Image 1 (cartoon, one colour):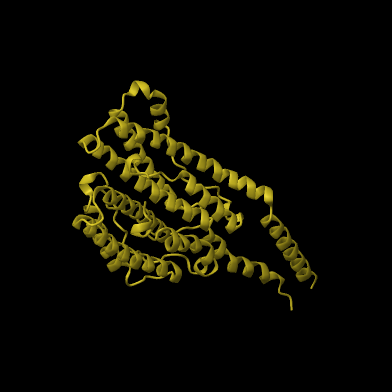
Image 2: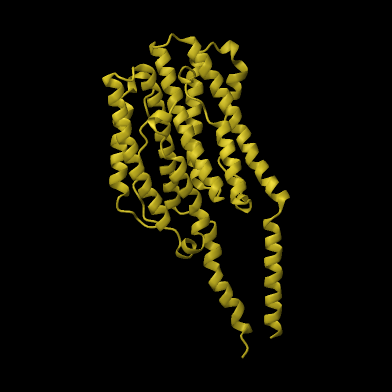
Length: 177
Length: 169
């Protein structure tokens, strides 16, 4: 009997401690800042690719072969990146670091590297040295914080939705209205 | 009666599969995520095609209308496929319409992307993976279903639906 009482007490204490942990704002903030760090990386990537796109668009005559080929490369890269963002959202909402995120990030990293390689071969490298150097270092996050599931779902949804709005790439410069 | 000798071993035996399965993601989950990423790409390409068509043709021209028709057809087939994906995630079992609707969506998307392929909005056609049997552990499926599948379902039903032709600008 004493054994069962001790077990029951331990269970109640365990549940109480566990629930207190669920509501731990500091832990939530720490985890969300982990997500924010990942997002900052995506924001930098967006700025970099956008700057390259603007240069390419100004370098060529609209309708020329080079112009169309640069635009096509940008559009395809953007689509792969959008695929990555969808996977990122799944990871954030399910609270699972998501093994699929690694594959999507690898695809997007490789597409972005191709885009940057192509762009740097077209734009005068002497005026873009810093950007090119930064471009070589682009690596999209492959994991979100492992304990993300501890953050309430609504907070995760708000954070990831706002983040995706911030880091999504716009259409090719000429197509923006 | 003294239950003590058997209580802990039984508790451990019952809970072990739950904890063992809690963090595992089977190949099926990777497969779903590949599909979701592919559909995210399709959506992005479709928007690029619409932007290009709107810029290139007057809205009364036959080319514009042809492209718009192809968009409507592709949008419909993608909706059907996404419904099959969503049902499969919810049920955790093979949905019969997965493969045929994936094929139909791919063909319709190909036709849509071909509208303006030469105009700089060409798409990389991503193969939609065929459905692989749902291999999630039995206990995990029942106990962790909502947690693991909620995110995928929400994205499939909300984020992957295409914007209408008129709303793309």
